[in-house]
Image (cartoon, rainbow, N blue to C red):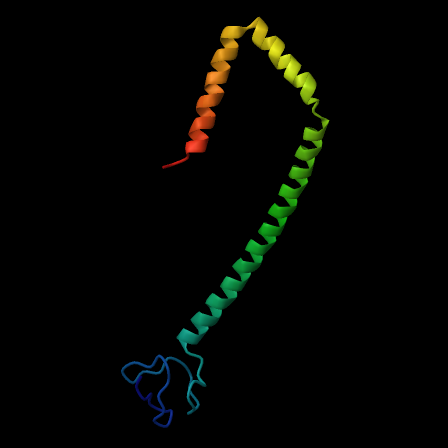
Length: 117
């Protein structure tokens, strides 16, 4: 830091080569320098974005909560005994397709369980 002309020989932050970056009244840090304005602007922008992200997170949470309740209600309505019987009947009528479907489902589940290693 260097002493800015016209401020009584007091060093001001951001002064380089004797040039003042803002209006000074002779005391340390009393001027509004571009560094302070930039920091204030960045802080305000960060607060605005934080508020927007927070609002979006609340909306996303509400949306997911609603969808989870709908899905859980649908799962409760499923008659698994009837579904199982329908699957057995389909497999007896179409054994080739049932084997191919089972192999495909097994392959997909294997890839999902294995993950990205």
